[in-house]
Image (cartoon, rainbow, N blue to C red):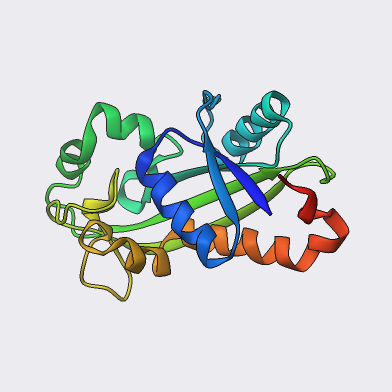
Amino acid sequence: MKLYLISRNPGKIRELSQLAKAYQIELASIDIPKVEIQSESLTEIALYSVAIAYIITKKPVIVEDSGLYIKHLNMFPGALSSYVYKTIGISGILKLMNGIKDREAFFKSVIALAAPTLNGVKLFSGEVKGVISEEPRGFGGFGFDPIFIPNGHSRTFAEMSLEEKNTVSHRALAFKALSKWILENCESISCWSWM
């Protein structure tokens, strides 16, 4: 079966493509604008984006949206993570966290799926708890990966290989849930016809 990913983020495309191979799903990225609404809800953003993408493509499409939620900052930047990364970046977040002992945070991912044989949109999510590091570490990944250390690990996402990050990340958990659902429901949704 084949799914089409709506994204222009090379890091996200790389991660999801590797995950898709592990579940024997062919994933192709389509370079169309991802229409995003302004919302504090990743679910609302993903739902709207995938609906527009499906109207344009008429193909089985997925949209992934994620955010970094920092407890001390009242869950900021959350659904605004991409914008915050582009504006104040990692240094801006670290400045806001300067001198703060409670560095609890979590990454959340929501994947929305729309396809010709589905009745509506299906949503899948993943969440990983961790802490914000004192300084950026590592050169892998993208976005806020250099300052996020998942619980049970001593390294940031950016210090992990792609394969290692894909065993623990929020995006991997959401994609695993998507893949499991497709495999369990393939016959009833005629997923073999997704091309």
